[in-house]
Each structure stands twice: as structure tokens, then as C-alpha cells.
Image (tube, rainbow, N blue to C red):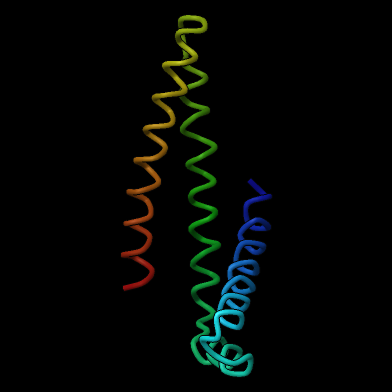
Length: 107
């Protein structure tokens, strides 16, 4: 769970770097215009928002499969059923949590 924030920072950096290379190589704007756009449109709360969501999603990813795995019964067939169930419930919980957190923090 402590690795997720590091991965988020790397993904943010690579997203900006990829956007920069695509913008410059595609001829959509100049270097100075891209950097100026980044600086003008930067909102520090969006970084905080990304870390809040990362922490909440990490909690969901750690607790829901652990719960289903702990209460699993039935050998190999039970493992398959528990993993499928935990995957489905984790996906649903992440979608619902994303909607709730977005509505609370960005409106």
C-alpha cells in the first residue's frame, strides 16, 4: 500500500512527459507554450485529490480480497470462486468509491 503513491507520482510525470513529446513532435504547439499551459492550468488540489483517491483505492484493494480469501471454503474450487467474487466486488466498490469521492471533493 505504501508503493501506490510512488507509482502515482511516476504516472503523473510520465503522463506530462508523454503529452510534451506528443505535442512537440506532432507540431501542435511550441515548447514554451506547452510549459506555460502547464503552469497556468495547474491546480495543486488535483495532486492532493489523486493521492486521496490512491489511498482509498489501495484500502479497497487490500481489504476486499483479503476478506474473501479469509472466509474461503472448498479447496481449489473455493479459491476460484473467492477470487472471482473478490474481483467483482472490488471493481464495483472502486467505481462507487470513485463516484462518491469525486462528488465530495470536486464539487
